[in-house]
Image (cartoon, rainbow, N blue to C red):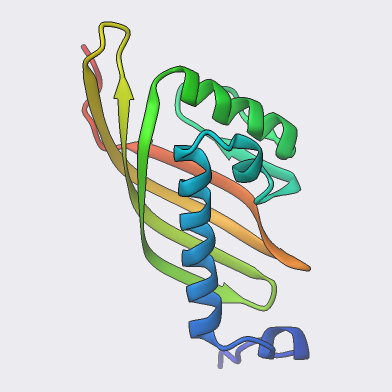
Length: 143
């Protein structure tokens, strides 16, 4: 029989509190990215947190994440929108699953819309921090 893990740390927040907190932190990330405050977005990552963006190298840690976010911004990524669909958590770990939309300004000035899904793992290290963030597009491959 499955029994939920329970300790004082896990019981210190109700499920709705954790879900709301993760959803709010996701929107903080969006705001930081959309306003070009890449350091604030990167500050949401754990010291060994990983950002895995399609077509870019893996970034580990807040400084590398900040560089990658800046690269994405410089490559024309803008107007990021996240929709958190589900948050599951136990003790000091949480998984966020959702959908994203982002506009990508092309070199000729046109805007390409991208949409897809993402999964983000959070860990409570005093504060909730991202330990892994990965997304993939729903758009068909360019041929």
